Each structure stands twice: as structure tokens, then as C-alpha cells.
Image 1: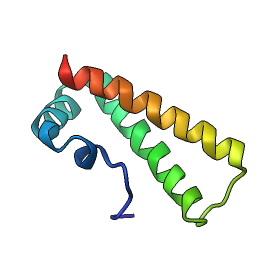
Image 2: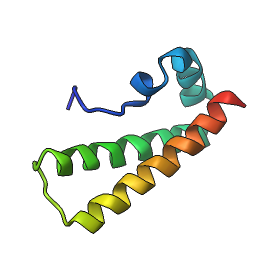
Image 3: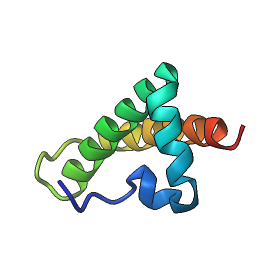
Image 4: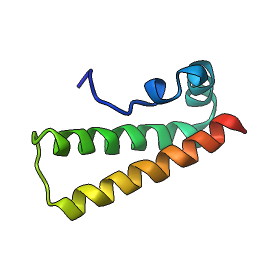
Length: 78
């Protein structure tokens, strides 16, 4: 899905170079980055009813996405 909201490079456009640098040079960041995008796409599919899910499950996915985004951001500003 090319138009999925909340993609990291759209959330932090000023950090695009740092995102790329960490994806290539930091395996932990790369793992979290991949997990964030997997969860983000699942949220998007649920929100658009491509793969509907129960409200609680969708809410939990959003919380997980937020926690991953927070952790990634901390690494971006460190």
C-alpha cells in the first residue's frame, strides 16, 4: 500500500537521512523499523476495512505502533 498513513519518512521528514543511516547501520533499529511498518500496515488495513478486526484488537495495534514509533524516535534523536 503506497498511500499508507503514518509511514516513518512522512512522520519525520527532517530525519530521512538519519532513518536511512540507522536502517543500514543498526540492526536493532532496522528490526524495529520493519516491525513498525508491519504493525502500521495492519492498522491501516483494519481502518480501511480491508481486514476488519475487533475494536479492542485494533486499539492494541495502535498502542503498539505508538510505542514502536516512540522507541524509533528516541533512537533518531540520540
